[in-house]
Length: 182
Image (cartoon, rainbow, N blue to C red; front, top):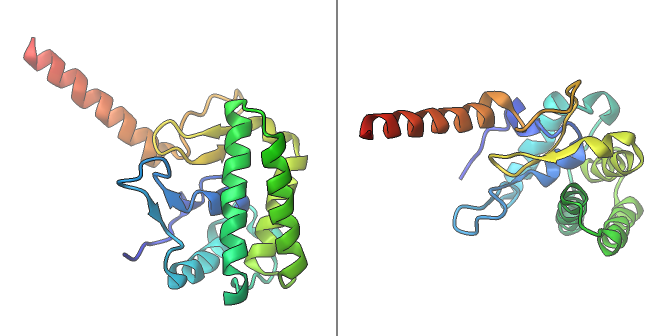
């Protein structure tokens, strides 16, 4: 299956979160989709990240993930997701922090400077060290991780135009259906 990497796919607010969000419906085994399952999609993500990532100004001359590092890159993706998701949920993430730092270190030791995997590791480390980590949330519709940069920290969805509209339309549908039934 081929996907289009649209601006919505970069709603996380940080490259590391956008990489983690490349698994769609992560916690629904029947519908879950790994967008990096095909190497051409990883290449397409790299090109789109240069255009749509919130951190695109920090990326410089971004290079794709070489085949030799794809396994380590996917490990990094999973540790980013596990660690930051645990932080948002308030779980004790000390063991996960060690895994996260090990995966990040492995990438930084093996990746070429300016590569997507190095940029992702740097993005994750910036997020870890930044006060924005307190603004991390999980989308109430799709489960993606995102940074809530709203003034009053009230964002509920990763992207109002996609997830917010879906939730509101579903709520409207069920309200109308209930009214029609009574």
